[in-house]
Image (cartoon, rainbow over all chains, first blue to last red; front, top):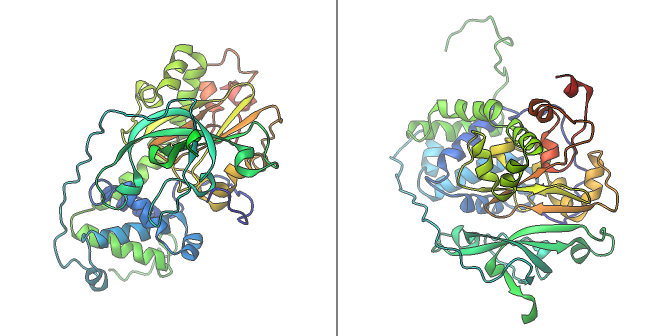
Length: 200
Length: 213
C-alpha cells in the first residue's frame, strides 16, 4: 500500500483493547496453531493478498486472517467444503511433517555501501518487492539472511535462500521534491530483486 | 440448554444472534476442535498471552536498560534478539530483532506497507491504526504529516528514517533518553517508554507521575 492516496488520516484509538471481540482471539489462535503445521507465513500472506481488492479494503484485519486461514486449510485438505456445509468432520485431517530446512551459509553479492537499482518486475503471485521502490536507485545499508525468497516459498517452489539487504532510498528519489531532503526510507529486499547500479 | 429466565443481560453473553463473522469463526473453530487440531484452551492461552504476558512493557524494559547500561546498549544494537533474551524474555527464532537508534538529527520509525509486520515479541500485538490503510500507505510517502497527526513535529534538521519491514527482520526504535530523567531508576525510565515511542510515532516525555514512582 506504500504511497497509495485517499485513505485519510491515521486514527488512533484511546485505550485500545488487545482484541476487540473474542472471535478475533479465536481467529488468531486458529492461525497460530496452523503456522508451521499446515502452512507457513509466506503462503498465509499470499492468501490474504488473493482476497479481491474491494473485499480486502473493506475487511478488518482479523476478517482477512479468517479468510486466509480457511482458504489455506481447504487448499491443504485439512478441512473440506463438504464439512463446512455439514457442520461437522467427515474425515481425518492429514498430519504433515513440515520441516523448515536449515539455512545454508550466506553468500552475498552486494556489501554495505553498494549502490543498487531495483528491478522493474510485476509478478502475478506473491512478492516482497513493494511497488513504490521498483526501478529505484538505493544504497545497501546492511547485509542479512540468508532468508527464503518469498516469491518461491509462497507457491510451494523449492527453497531459494538469498541474501537480503536493508536498502536505503532517498525520500526525494521516491516521492519527488515535496519530500524533505535528507529523509530516507529503508526496505528489506532480497538479492534477486536488485541489480548493481552500473549495469543499467 | 436450560430454560431459566433470570440473568439475561447480566452474564456477559450477547443476547442477539452472532454476527456473520462470528458464525463463520464458530463453524471453523468447531470443525478444528472436532478434528483434534485445536483445543478450546488454545484460544484462552493465546488471548491471555497477548493480554497479560507479551506487550510493550517488554520493549520498555529493554529500552530502559539500554539507557542506563552502555555495554548493554551496544549488545542491543548489535543483536536485538539476543539482548532481549538476555533480560529473560522469549524471542522466537522465526524473526530477528533489529533495534534502530534515535540520535540527535536522526529519528527512526517503523511501518509494514505490504502487510502488518510488527515486533510482537517485544511490543505485543499492533494497534489497529498500525495495520490500517492510512498508516501503511502514508508513512513512507509523507511520514512528517503522519507524525504531526500523532502530535510529533520534527524540525527539518532532523532526518526521518522510515523502515518498511518486509523480510524476516523486525525493527524496533530505541528512543533518546529525554532530558529531566537524570538519576531515575530503570523502573521509572521504563514507565515513560510507550509503545508509540518504540514504533517511532512519539518521543518519551518526562512526567511528574513517572518521576514520583
